[in-house]
Amino acid sequence: MKNITNPILTIMIISIIHLLSSCQDFLDEKPSTDLVVPDNLEDIQALLDNEYIMNRNSDMGEVASDDYFISKQEWESWNEITRNAHVWADIISPTGRFVSWNALYEQVFYANVALEQLDDIVPDSNEQVDWDRLRGSALFYRSSAFYNLLRIFTMPYHLVNPELGIPLKLSADVNKLVKRSSIEDSYAQVIGDLEAALDLLPSRATIATRPSKQAVYGLLARVYLSMGDYQKVLDYTSLALELGNELMDYANLEQGNTFGFKRLNEEMVYCSYFSSGSIGYSSDTFILSEIYESYAAGDLRKSLFFTQAYQDGHVKFRGTYMGNLYLFDGIATDELLLNRAEAAVRLGNEEQALEDLNYLLEHRFEAGKFEPIAGISGEVLLERILEERRKELVFRGLRWEDLRRFSGSQYEKTVTRDLDGEIYTLEPGSPKYAYPIPMDELQLNDMKQNPR
Image (cartoon, rainbow, N blue to C red; front, side):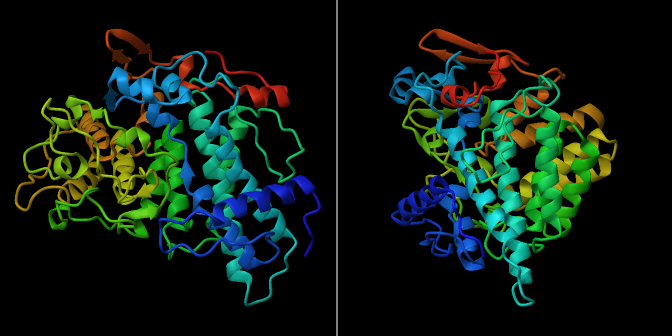
């Protein structure tokens, strides 16, 4: 086994792990992560099990999306980056640093450390399964981080400048500067890492915070949905659902729980969450009435996802699958079903689309209240699927990507903010669908900035 000779790399690992070891994990199922240098399979597993790093995602897409509104007073209480992101300002981070960029590349760094250390371990017959799983996990984490960077810092796939992808950092050497790759190369790297991970991972994970073959299929479906490749979406969601299609019956859930759901429930394929809970649980962050009022009588999502109305009639979101203040943005059965339903109807397979939609919704209503959807097809059926998608996946980190991919279609939308009469607007296809690259990164590495 080689030693890590890069002193900056060693210091970063030691510093990060000492920081993490001082934090109490909120998922009791996670193993200990108190290591210094990952020089064996056990240590590499512990490095990748740092959920505080590897299972978090940026909430910047949710901040900029359109499922909620806030008061001017609440907006003014947010930090400067979040305030600017909420109104799609020309400058997001005046200081030049951007936590979301750094946090996602930290995941890439951890994954690259694991991959490079695994390259120097020759597993014996008793270690091969674990070696494969760790390599597949590292590839999954790296591809997930790259994809989340693409969703925030590049334009929608069908509208993007071909040159303006992301830096594909494929080495743990922090001294190695990497310029922006093309958008095609960026998506190809994401897909290639995921495809390479497939044969290495177990079909389903014993711990939902660890990757699995089913999670890879689910993430591939997300990626191809954002690219508009509906046949691939249909293929990969079908493979994922063959490995498990469990749904909670909402009629059997306790209605009085603070957050509506328990942690690590049976629908969860892969657990990741926003690094901040502020958007969902700020004191004056409210759900748009058009969403709240769209749930039919007997639809239990209305009571499980949202608080009771306040005196002013406003409601807040409470229904995270994390069962706490963190917002779940991982992969779950309901998303897989909705992805497959959308892809199926777009490809003309309306029977499959109706089957998936009805299977989902019959688990969301009071007993005896759901009437199966029938007699609709084509655009009407697609519109219904997209409507249910928004209602089911509210505050799951997916709405921003939906707004992005709908630009230029009949489903595109102009988003507006009204903060005490001050109006802000995000037009379909706007260059503001790509956050600016942090200035400190541009100063360190000569790269093109995203236009605003």
